[in-house]
Image 1: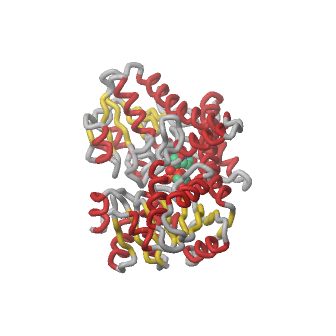
Image 2: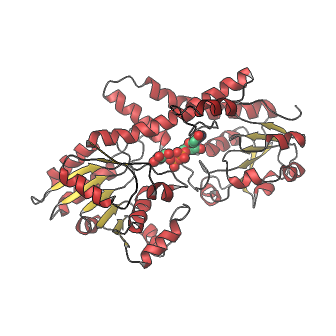
Image 3: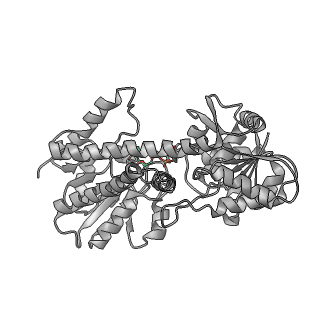
Length: 435
Ligand code: UDX
């Protein structure tokens, strides 16, 4: 089947290559010509495991093509996925400028039936608005449907998540739209949940906000554990074995980041307030998440006393492992706070250093994890990259000026740190090693 994808960012590009992998013929569109030049050479503009391989495979199979013209997308595929960005405005509302522009261009170029599918995370009722926009700007009387097919991919495992989803949600209001989307997903081995367009839109927001709530609950428990002497990992293990709760997304840390959770939680609160539904619970998630990083910073400051002229090693800059994405990364906020207090930073991340350099050219970017720790007054772990777990703590101790570690992701070996007489602070558990 011929499918068009408008917007070749994390969602659009992953969708495009995965549909090509399932045998469809894909045209991906993006207005950024520099990005397109890279893509045509088989190079992903962002780091995502498996992406370059699939890109190259399907450029070669000719099932994947690129264009910078939205008009081409309207002509090419009977199904057109809208995957453009919906950034947050200053007030936390989603900015729908790009979505509206795409809807207008589709309308102006509509010559025969098209199914227009919103895949970007959008506020509820966006489907209705896209429908109204296309009807308003259409030049002829070609038929169309608008559907919602939210994505649930996680950065770092986006391809696996897309090829093997837990479920596919399709929000439709016509039998034709349903049957076309079933054709798109024919090669996927998972339940297809068919709903109204409005319910599909809400499933996406509700899922992300619920996961953010789960993490936030674990982070709140961590604070309770620190105050009471309990251990958060033991507590969430005991909770998570109850199938009604589940063990996933209960890892306490320094707060969630990324392009989705912070934005989607704020957008859901905004939607609720606009509909005059009490949003205090959802607003609370966002406030607690900001407080989590502040509590971590306070812990560092309390232990190190004066931060001016102290050297702090930071392991991990990306908002999570296996990505070079820095959007809403807790490490970046922490670096800003530490710099403001006068500390010097030695930073390391396996893939996110080039992006960080653009924002903070004044940091020292280390050649590896041990180099980052060299001469530092403390080491702070912000992202749980597997290579940090595997780093020999004896080697870390040998290069640190003072053997103090703040493990913001509970990923280092506490027993080993204690054996080496290193002081290690985790999240939601008591510190080990000499005070
Ligand atoms: C998320 C959703 O998981 C995905 O379904 C949606 O489509 C997009 O948003 P993503 O932002 O890529 O995906 O990453 P995710 O793995 O969900 O992690 C988000 C943040 O939560 C990260 O900062 C991560 O470190 C944090 N997190 C996650 C925790 O702090 N604890 C956990 O237990 C899980």
